[in-house]
Length: 260
Image 1 (cartoon, rainbow, N blue to C red):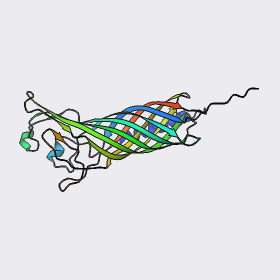
Image 2 (image 1 turned 135 degrees about the horizontal axis):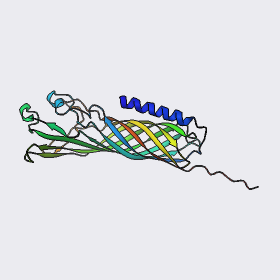
Image 3 (image 1 turned 90 degrees about the vertical axis):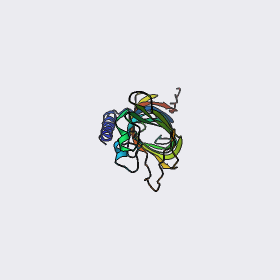
């Protein structure tokens, strides 16, 4: 939450500073953002391994605590002032627990894998369709908000390397799954010229609003298993993303030169 508050302050200061400039720019018809940044997961994605297993936390987290994101979006403005646009986005998110050292798990009869290094990864490829509102498209600093309906293709794997060699080490792959969700974003687009600018912002993503299910795990594969069952509560896959990148502007009106 501190990181989110810091981002909001930075956005406000940036908008206020650049907004002091009285210069105006021609409004684009198309806008493309290419960006990347940091992802911070929320419950039930994040967790503490193996403590949450030992305590019987319900639902069991996915144990992926943070990661990075990269992607692009394209906007087409449907009004003459370029304040309201339709939005298409593609985002890749990689999440990980990092390497976790575990000891004597055989004794607690929960995993029975001994001592070694455990790691869980999750990858989310997101396709978003939505709408955006720009507050000041002619100004150097243009704050914006948008909302998207998302399709999320999710995969991942879990590995364990046992101390003393590869005996009893294992790797399990997540069965690919598709979930439908929503994403809400806010940021500031700062124009450096008529064609190029920079963008900074943040977004909240809820990846599995719809499509939850429960599948059978095997010795080599496992599923998301985010649907509520008789023994487990449903899982919420939510995360915050902070991003920065480059803006490209296209389709500005051409000034007509009147010959005298």
